[in-house]
Length: 167
View 1 (cartoon, helix red, strand yellow):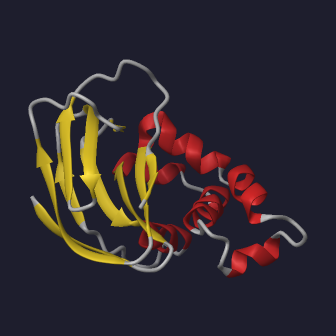
View 2: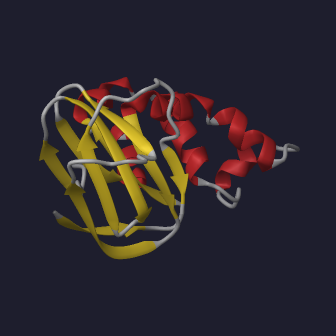
């Protein structure tokens, strides 16, 4: 499947099961906002006077990292991109880099900024990149670049993952 990925400055690409949307609260959204600010160049730095961003960011993003790394969400941190991408099923992934749990099988793809904004302000309509109905279960994902993401249904060998990647 092809899709257009258009991320703004300090943004990202998110994949998650729609059932996990209800787990987000203000503290998770704030942590995700901080996570997107890789270099510490947004107004968020003023919330932490006299602290180095290199100390603030790891500490303040622990909640969203744990959420992602439990298999509930995959997040690629992206700083300005507009590219045509592919999301394709494959039978085998020998070295998956990310794992995603889809307990309902309803996959949602959205930009990180859009997710934060629409969860913080539920009256807004979310601009979804794509939705896909897949069989319930675990999925292995792999990509070398953002323009081609491969996935297959597979059972993970462990239960802690590295589901956040900076681009």
